[in-house]
Length: 387
Ligand code: GN1
Ligand code: MG
Image 1 (cartoon, rainbow, N blue to C red):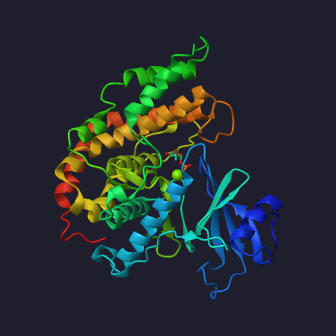
Image 2: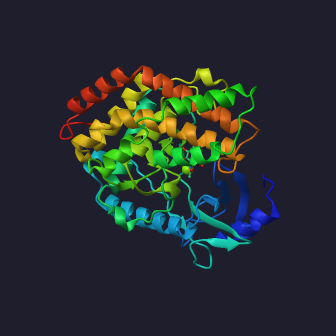
Image 3: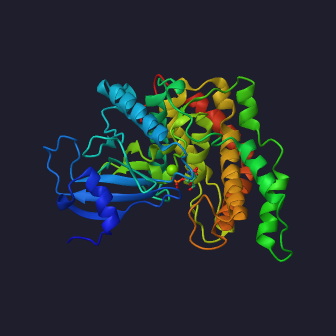
């Protein structure tokens, strides 16, 4: 059955694939920034652009990505690099399937469409695989960790200076704190707004040490490498049949950064079984058994290219990234929901409360997290480990 499509969407899709062969256009995923659609069509395998049956069409949020052409440049650099690496697959792949989204060009051969001030592009769709919002079990967790490790491993030899900085200060926590300070200084919190007061009190009590990763970077203990930028649970694709990770999607935030941003983001999103959109903030908690499974999968592939300093700062990033995301949600609430898509007033404040509760839960388990990281880094010998 042909699903309803708006004329405007159909006209954009037609720039990538002839309209008469498109069968459906539907919303895809639950991104907070871009708009994503799955376009299906009666393509044939003879299609010279390699598009078979479906592609993902996205409108990039140019309020967030001010230089979308640089996002595309990074995406092309990344996918060509990974394709080259996969031509002689690394032994850690053990013959597994591994996919990297590729840019689907327009019929006129350009890499994107600019239309009425909007920026549209398409990428290939990874079929027979799914991403979920919540971890299903320990095997799934280990696969997510393996997926991030493989992703890092495949791009570890891509020089970071070949990637543009498309989002300045992305994941630089002290800069988010400065911005929050500037926003809050113009505000008076209503006496009856308990939720907002609690969130602001939480930030006030966590200011110290918020620069832990950036200070380590400034001292030269940590260095920038290519990172994913947003490897949350629903960006890790799992093969529908084998249950194995087959690739990471949502590559717009690929740019130079610290691998710690990625590890922290992956763990904060996977180890909270209540999810980022938990109904009640108090439901959020950090499940250390899931953390163990993810780190096991990750370190099995990545242990070999992590330095002692990298390992030293792992526990810190596990605590920092949920705190940072809470701060980002809170600031957006104070600014009137201008960054993260929200469905109701107070949504971003609620999301902040969830991340702050998760941070508390991580803090309460910090000694156990430190010993876990120590144990795993000793046990997982890169020469002998198998997934
Ligand atoms: C945003 O749009 P989405 O859902 O892929 C955000 C991430 C956050 C995430 C929280 C460019 O990602 O940093 O962790 O929301 N992306 C950007 O769900 O800011
Ligand atoms: Mg994203």
